[in-house]
Image 1 (cartoon, rainbow, N blue to C red):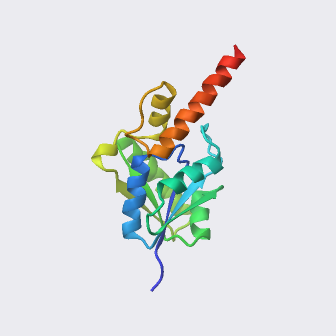
Image 2 (cartoon, helix red, strand yellow):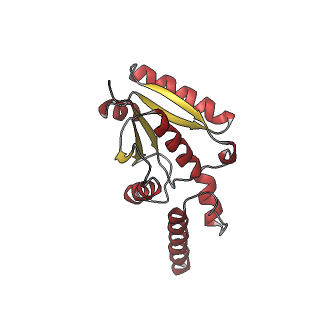
Image 3 (tube, rainbow, N blue to C red):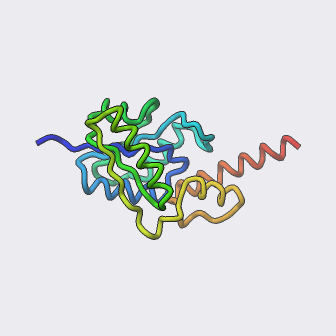
Length: 170
């Protein structure tokens, strides 16, 4: 019997409970879930790749069948390189579907052996995105119900450091 591996790629800047829901549910469906932290996306990031990987690793401690790695380049090429059978993506809202549908078709064109599987997020996580978490945290809002405690602490520390940097520029 062959091992079924799925790739769960993203920037995870930062990881939140919606990501963890998809990762844990994927771990029930596959032998191995490789959470792949993308290092150089087009969008600007709050945390560097090493910090994001460390936050993800701590968030999945004790969850069987999950491995965390960093990667760069085409996601579908990385999936093939690690022997993944599929790429898993989470869907929250209709606009996610349109984007993920186009991406899945492009990936299928590039690597016909790699499928894309979309898991619908739990209802309680439909509003969650890393951008939302960062915006709320940057304005001093409480994101403790949206992210694991260690991620909340990292956000508080990061925005405190950024605030001090802004004060020093004045």
